[in-house]
Image (cartoon, rainbow over all chains, first blue to last red; front, side, top):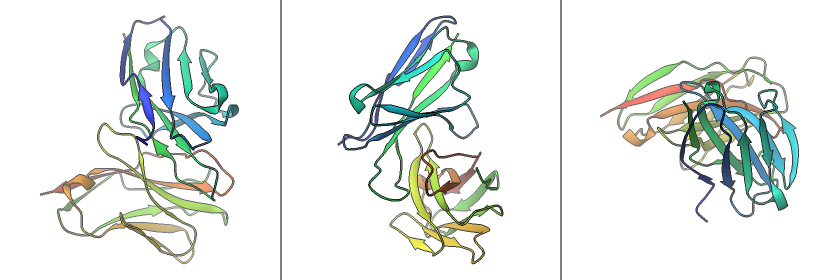
Length: 115
Length: 110
């Protein structure tokens, strides 16, 4: 297993365009998380899935953001009508519910630049 | 979510031990103390976690104060590859998400 994989690694888009990112979690992990990180700050939680169910969404996740995890496997995060303030690193993480407080494994992130 | 307080930055020398402090005076009885680190241009990676007792693993040790209001991450022999931002996070046993602060930026001098 190569760990959590995110694609693309970098995305430059014009303001107003839609973008979609993909995350492939570690195969046996049933939990998947999305975070956003701006320069100099720690990652901020956006949303998480257990299998295909989206169980929590942050207030940071505006109406322009939507995340899906069909069949409980990979996940996509779409941002519609991008704004310059959306420029950030988008991180995906996965974990397993098999134990108490299991660790989360993060991907390398997708860096979005909105111009 | 209970808050943690960490120094913004620390500096140490290669092959010396590093002690990274974290204060969490409002910790509750069910909060676990987690440490993650983030190397440049990488996603965060898990380092260690504990509840009450001190913990050791291949990466580091976690020393937890008796009253649990503070903890210290110990890197026994720092290498240049340990230069990263280290995050101390409180996570309730039932919580799913991790709530990151700004962390401590650790610089290792050769």
